[in-house]
Image 1 (tube, one colour):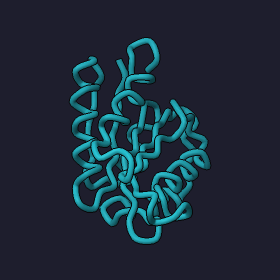
Image 2 (image 1 turned 90 degrees about the vertical axis):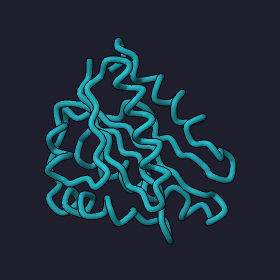
Image 3 (image 1 turned 30 degrees about the vertical axis):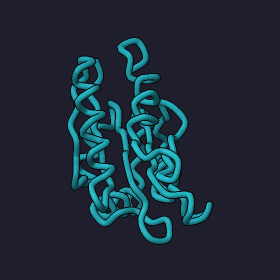
Image 4 (image 1 turned 45 degrees about the vertical axis):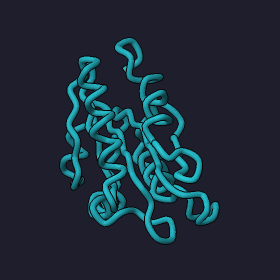
Length: 152
């Protein structure tokens, strides 16, 4: 089974709730999962041989939430190459704020992880609060596509 770190960017707790539900599911599938509610780049780099899942909401003008911003900035400043890291990104947002802002934090994390040479497990998942009141209805099927024992 896989070692998976879930790195959360959350303002009001929605992304945090999703992360913990995903962790419960993945642990139930036999994976070793840790959720980082206030993630650091040091914690993130401990997974460079494993799987990192970023679950983040978007704030203001398409920005990264304050709790995840220090990790993002540290990785962006140092650009550590992590070619063995496999990753997934769930961006949570509200499309009524406009296309440029919608799920902007998720797009930024995906761009950075690709720049670090990490390998995506699946295309980024954007969850629109205008369409999906319960994000888990969209997130869980996405997680299940790559989290089966044969896939991870």
